[in-house]
Length: 350
Ligand SMILES: Nc1nc2c(ncn2[C@@H]2O[C@H](COP(=O)(O)OP(=O)(O)OP(=O)(O)O)[C@@H](O)[C@H]2O)c(=O)[nH]1
Ligand SMILES: [Mg+2]
Image 1: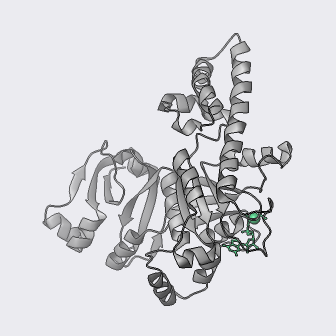
Image 2: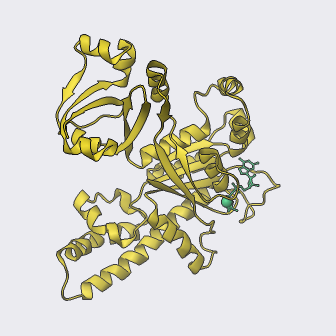
């Protein structure tokens, strides 16, 4: 699963990529580990040889200035956005005069609105051109008929300045559109790169930006790249103290990674043993047998049953054996809908 980072020049995209992935400056694509304290709990119980976290791929797309950057350059950004599974827009809130804002003034709500509008405009152009082409074609394939229907629903939504994300498309309609490169159907997350002073003073997100996010129904995650860089340089004990001083349970980078994972529609089931404690990303709604295929295709093919426990129950019982003895281990069949935080042991036959 890949997340595309978009934003105006000097908004903090590279900083986000660096903070989430630990990649050196200049890297444009890297992998972020998704923090999951449940794995740490299981690791303390099982003492595994390794702990494997879920990951999300991040790609920094080129910066652009809505309304000013030449179309050809904006298209390169849009192509990147089309390849991504979800988008994170980094919105500059920090004021630092040493880093000039390309539009001379720092106005997070203006930048966020402009980015959102640019994506909507790109989709509207697509919808118009693809609809016209499909409407003209005399020998439409059934999937093209379905796509045209869905595009016809999308057009007035986009003309009304809204993303197709909220257009109420059925899964079938979304699937029919999947090959047409629309970007406003993808999850979009706003990352507000706050001024350090505002974070320390507790002002948080500028209200005008929160209003834009609220009106568009978008998740907004505040962080401060400058403070995160400081935190990243601390050793783990100092880090805990530093966060406690702000009354925080996790770093901004951790919050961003977790929120991105959720925005991608992913949840985790867990496996635990002496070799490995691991989080496996699945889409919410995945059935036990299908989820088994993530671990190994043999387990999916030879699926007999899943032994399942909520991770907190396992923690409370102290061991898998104790859970079984207490009769708290659930035996689930292939159609069981796996829940976030389920610890699963598969029984299979090959
Ligand atoms: N004061 C301050 N400076 C920041 C903050 N975040 C980023 N910067 C600075 O802003 C400049 C741009 O940050 P980047 O992370 O490179 O931003 P970008 O969006 O990747 O920029 P481009 O890729 O050039 O468009 C750098 O000099 C950063 O040090 C912040 O929270 N506070
Ligand atoms: Mg950059």
